[in-house]
Image (cartoon, rainbow, N blue to C red):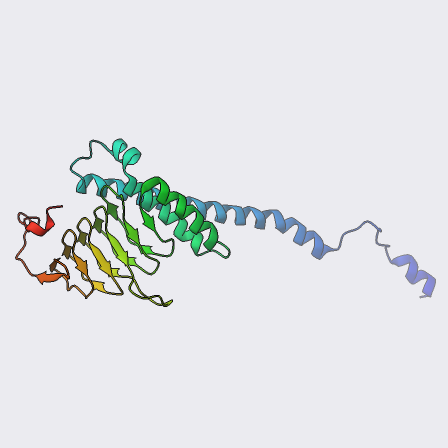
Length: 236
């Protein structure tokens, strides 16, 4: 077969034709984008549901702990403690983002001016946290607070060091801290403890104890469901 015949047998490729590989890739792109959108939507919906569940938890916790609460709507609209913790949760996530620290601090200052509660954006706060009255509460940068904790007004979770170290308290679960109490330094406050009004705590408090006085001394009362609030130090 001559060279000319071979040329005649070959079907020329149109100049506008698209290679098969590119055609397949182009056809797959819409499906990939659709899958990515579905995943983003599912992730966003999950975050919204989680936030809504936390919101309901906080409201129910406030209703349970505040005998002056008239209704859930009243609590949502008028509780500065709830407003402060809701703001903090958003600012805590902002703090963890690249470039988010300065905006978090600025917005935290705004929150403090509105609620009277100062919580550093880096502080770690657990679930169903409640601040009654709210005014004058200060929670430092490296503080850690567990679940079902209740603080009254004027409480300080502060530091005793100027170094960039863990310098604020770690508070366990189901802890109640009375009005005006000061918990200072990297102390550990055990689960189910109570700290009396105006107490100054600078040492660890074991689980189940009551800390009262300046400096705080420990008591170990026999509490049950009917007498857990009868200690005079807790009249707050």
